[in-house]
Image (cartoon, rainbow, N blue to C red; front, side, top):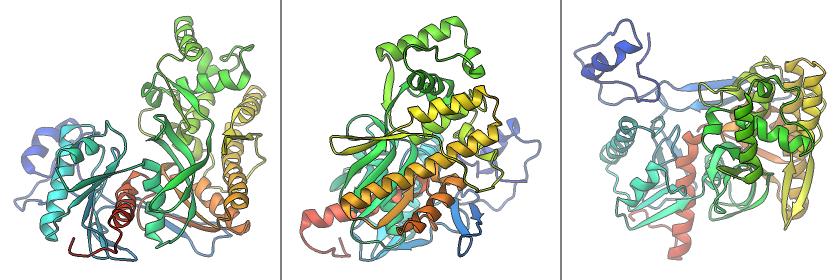
Length: 451
């Protein structure tokens, strides 16, 4: 027995709505004459253990029932801000003095019902805590419903916060960090200032501003958003770029050999001519593509289907393996991680019949090595010691635990999420922290808690 909702829609918390909607997914519905006032999902928390960890690492995957809207305490009084979060797994945040009220998990703002729940949650928190925000913080992506909604509110000012900057600021704010840090931000997608899709980022800076100092080399997202649901498209691009133009990208890869001649022609033409091929530096898409190359997931039935299945092969055994090759290139002062050597070696292992679990372990270990190698170079360049790990890819337990431990061994002071989620559920907190810093700079004075 559990709370009920149709996939992609918010919890049905009114009896009438439950009776109307839920018989398509449930056999029986238990309801009551005591009405539910506010919909709140279950919280999901994970405890990670490793022999080298001083204590188990407890982290939120979803922060909701039992924990929201408990506050996050900030280092200084905040301007009166409401942050609308992101588009997926969104939460909202409102400020009062030193406190940030972070809402329960709301969900994905892809349908009208969840969007209405998003608006109702803001109104509920404003009323409950007698808040009157003057400033709005939202994601930079112009197509997000939360961003469009922010523009309609007519507040004194709207602060647009880049998605990965918000991830980084969220982790910094949670730990009360000051000064500059290096943010290792890995996720599926975020709108970059250069109009490309980011997601495998190393950012240097603080709350007010950051600069992109390194990233995963971009690959074409063939078909745009279709590639998220059909990761074989990412696999095709990886194989073609990894092998080079003189070799057939599909040869020896069962997941791609299953494509018919028409599909191969169309997708090959898209790659060659750059048709409907959005550049992305997303680490999440790299995981998707590798999972598809291995035949683990060529059609995603849910978000991060392939990466989750690929991590499951490791059976929560965090031992590192020999890394695949990769290369680092400095392009106009920005370091780029080239995964093509990795893909070539991985395909050699696949062709040699190496066990998929062993390939997965080598791939995961290589990503950990990438994190450490780039952080070492950034420390030499920027004299940075603080490193924060954020973004939904760091929900991957193997990647999180090993990156944390390896960086600590290398002498970095490393922070990861403990009280808010690493995924987009923590974005609203980061938006508040960034917006507050920008407002304080623009006004040239410390915050007056009354404003």
